[in-house]
Image (cartoon, rainbow, N blue to C red; front, side, top):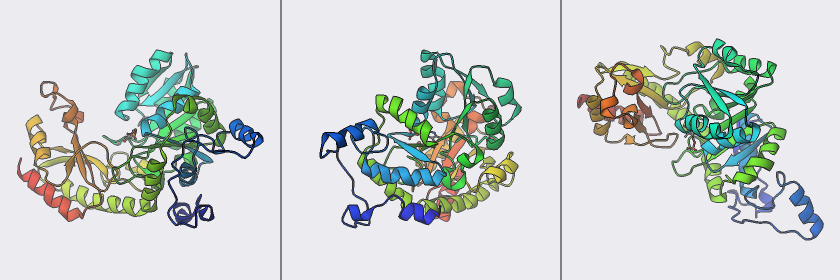
Length: 386
Ligand SMILES: *Cc1c(COP(=O)(O)O)cnc(C)c1O
């Protein structure tokens, strides 16, 4: 489907709301019917119709169609956060005694889900280095029901060979779920690489303005309908209509914003790589990125999220550098208009800091929509301060 059609027209039945170009926020918890027969039909299939907004809602339905089409998926489910788009399908599809294979260094709350929450329900997880394909084969057990991917991840940008892993998973009847937040559907299409379920934090690129928290899960209709009719309706992670409207608004400019961030990040990472005080720049589209061949194979582009390390990287030096930035904001999250920085030492105590552990040295940066020269000037003065 043409991306311009998806972003500007798909799902928008304007004659149903006064031919307004911008869709209405359907701020209603429930929907009424002319007769019992109509109510009965709606109650029988909440996945398709509008009955109650913990299930479906017309504003959300416009977004649902667009996000499914962007992923090349049959359907989509919308969530009030990215993490619920990850946790709810897993709680829905797995049961006590089942086993998960997950890759290392994934999103922090996803790690907590596997380590703390799922064991309470008798579901166990083996973490593996997903950059080595053979590790997947070796970790499979008879009870393995799910392979969980995040490619690339968002601190050290490890990739998995998605096509090879899904081919293996299919041969063993194992479901695959990927967190595709880093690339967004514009730069990586996991469904076409054989993944069953694609989760994304819509808080990041889809929203794009740092003003809404949301998640999306795409995949085949039967699987999504099952999740919807069970754990989705039971746990109640529905997105609100105003939040859905903000995501629709964000979607209009998604290709522009991503392309801008991608281009600016090329300029900024190149500048950083040549700076004498910078040890290393880790970004999938850097010319010396370790897994660059796999990047070329399965990603069409890249977001503005990357990490650097400083030369002779002491705890104080990292802290001084981050504190010295005047325009790049110290904050978590990413995908908005504003450039950000978050050092790994924000979650490491000074007495635990190990200057030989690269993971402690990492400073994660996100390049937003500002002029690259404006950001470079900020980085330059902060590097001069150390
Ligand atoms: C932010 C993020 C999430 C969680 O999304 P929320 O919308 O914050 O719940 C999951 N995965 C990745 C890679 C993220 O960056």
